[in-house]
Image (cartoon, rainbow, N blue to C red; front, side, top):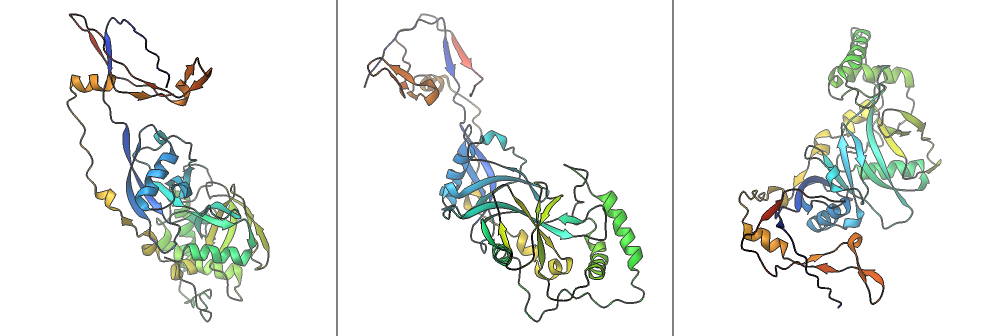
Length: 363
């Protein structure tokens, strides 16, 4: 190898401080296997690395392919951000809820689509549906029928969603009593919906689920049964293409079983649950269950309080591999090549002035 040696006189010695170059990121891993609950990990990744580095480190911990993982930031039952593998790890803050989804990238006919869960709330004109639960990142076929898409989604939620029996008339409303007071309850729910919810992204955002769900359950059931005039066995949820916030419908997906459906990676899908189906077949406790990996209980390395001058000198004189942006020009082959760099102290003065580099810079 070509070696270039130069001597540079200096007025003082600038020594770097040995700083921690790794960080720990707390994540939930959502497996491709629908029967495995999400698992909480504490992943050690390069401090100045990318989301791809996080996925590789998590893949080794969880024994899954790192290239099949997608990092997301989940907030208020929706995806606040879906990261690419090139996004910097510094975008993740300590307070963020990071969910990493395992996807199926082995089939070229599949497309990864964000999926939101919504509950129909027809009684309130302000919020026709409420987001609930954790969103999904599903690997779905690009082209399929409506019934195939429905079955794919049910299979993805098999851990916490049970299928109704053929003889189960779950869609039929419960018998009404003469003094049920439906009108008062409905007006009360409408008032709660318009005052109790907070809107983060849009004036048409949903109200926070759970604040008025108990009081609103029966009136919504009654309203849906009156408006829809249910005749036969309905699907537990209807499908819509929605915006990235999940609060505005773009296009309904046909419920005709043999209707051809085409999806792409830019689509956001919503499952609009019938209130009675959600109450009877959606197990919220099972949906919220998760496990913890051994890495989550690992002890965090305490911060080093004292730094010795000898450690700074050792780091200064250690061999450094230059990056692609700092390639060295070789005069023999006349090309830029990746090289290594090493400083050595040749001679010292009687009085040595040492400057400590307290700051760092990354391009």
